[in-house]
Image 1 (cartoon, rainbow, N blue to C red):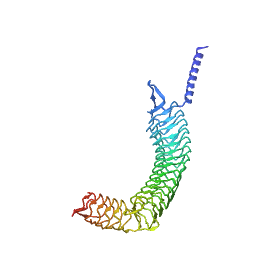
Image 2: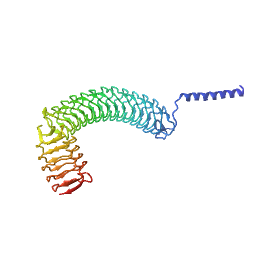
Image 3: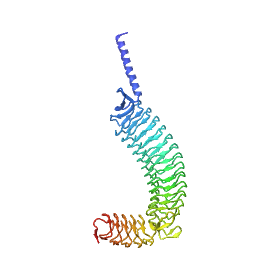
Image 4: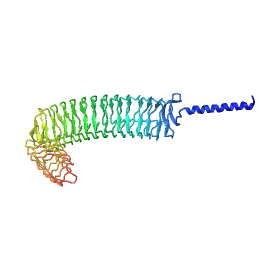
Length: 490
């Protein structure tokens, strides 16, 4: 064989080898440069554990050798796209936080997504794998997701997992048991169907959406505080397994009626406050109605069942009540429990609107007024009264009040936030509590020689310019009057 022929064969072989190598390389996945791996004990790279990124590419391809994407590995790198291989099983906390990802497909190999893993991006869509069991806290918080399907494998959705997105549609599978605190808060949901597996709806879970109706399945035993606050609910069907309705659960909605299931024993603070309720049917098992539970609604009558022992402060404040039935079981009525109404009938008997404290046997203690729910603005406090309780006449738009000579104590906020221009304090009066007359239109005040205590801010936010303090006063707050009011001692 000639020398030239030998050289030609060698050259042909070299070219073939190069072409083969190129073909193999072309068929392989090209991982982005700048991927940082964990170190083994011997100092070599552990290419199954990705811990950081030093590159500048915003479209990243992760090596197929990687099984774990470490905590904060890509945080704040302005990534616009990421390709995750099906070798990855775990994405740790904040791995892709604070980037500019818009779309995401997570392979079925992934079984764990850490806290805040994809938070603070621009995701408009995400495909979750069927292998997920738990979606951790804030995993997809602060994105732009508009729709979402939770896979059948998921049993728990963590705190704030999908909060601050633009969700209008969410499909929950029958596997989900718990929805965590603020999980779907601040989205644009108009409806949601809860699965029959669900047991717990967390604190503020759906705060700030646009839900118009709800049906809570019987599997749900707990609805935590503020779960549906600030939506547009007009109707709700409650689970027959609920024992408690937490604080603020349905406040700031548009409910016009509600029926509580027989299982309900306690209604939390402001649970139904700031709605448009015209009727409410209470459970025969209810024992406690919390502070502000039904304040600022449109109720015109309410019958409290024989089980009720406590009505909290301001519980029915600012409704349109003309009729109230109070049971013998009732032992406590909180400050201003029925203020701001138009009561004319109490326990089916004509009433002047005064509601008294209760004795241990359930009878009225007519020495202590705890609330005024009448419609009149010029009122006469009954002669039996020795004490105006905390907030007793608060916020009733009163223009005149006649106090009896039996009165010894005016407690905190008792006559606050009315429209009084004058008031005569009786000679029996001993104590004037904190903010007792705050927020009226008083131009002057004369104290009887019996008064010994004038509390903090007792007469602030009025139109008083000067006042004479009698020698009987032993205790007076330096802030009892507005700044600039001239005070003199007798």
